[in-house]
Image (cartoon, rainbow, N blue to C red; front, side, top):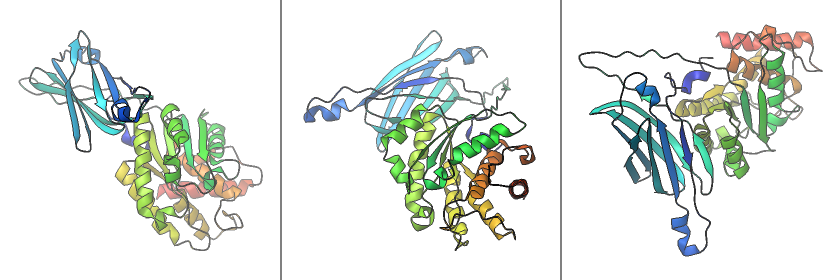
Length: 359
């Protein structure tokens, strides 16, 4: 669970900001530039600060993109600070909001916001309460609600959709455990698709932004992280920006080496771990555990005949790894075993995952 909470702010979310990106329909080409501009209405409830006796006297929102910067003071009326920032070109803007009580900066928050012409999005922004010192030091204890993730979106290709779908394998594993978990899963997949293909697909954008996901799992084309690492990192970052805007957590599905060349796992692991570190994302080490099981002397075949795609045992191993990563419960409590896998084989795969996470 500590991995899942990595990107969540340790303070409670004080404010919910609703962003509406709007633009008029294009009528002529000469008007396109102006009419493609977006606007962001911002409304911030100040009630949480007032409840701890902090009065906000000034609020400033600043948006930056490339060399553009727009800074605007918000109007404060009773318990709300609000403003509308206009003339925003489509793309990803970085938003910073700072609240002041007289000359003291009392709270700060920042996030990335993507403006899509003609679309509406909701963005959650968490404001962090600054340390306030003087003749009296104010210490605030916050109760942290670390809820378990429930909604998962898998984005990938045949490595994800083989054996009736990894997302359903993962769901069956989770819901068969003694923890009585109830989760929802969905996927966007296609044979050989890369993260670039997914980023250039408007349906993927819509699915990410409108699905209210807790976790979005990205799986790159099997060889791309080692054949074109920069492309992988570039489009992983672009998709991560969309996922951040949606309020979900980015996760990477580290895939495995080809059966005939297990040394590939070194490059694959390096690329996925680099992406995870740069984007503060979870990396689910399926590929490394594949290699661990493959090199352990056993008779379980994790690959299909092509030496690339996962066998039923391989997909089951992947599902167990996702369950362990996201929930960290004991795999011995998992009751689901797909038809075609023996109890002994299932127990061996469960023990292998447990052993990996105990290192």
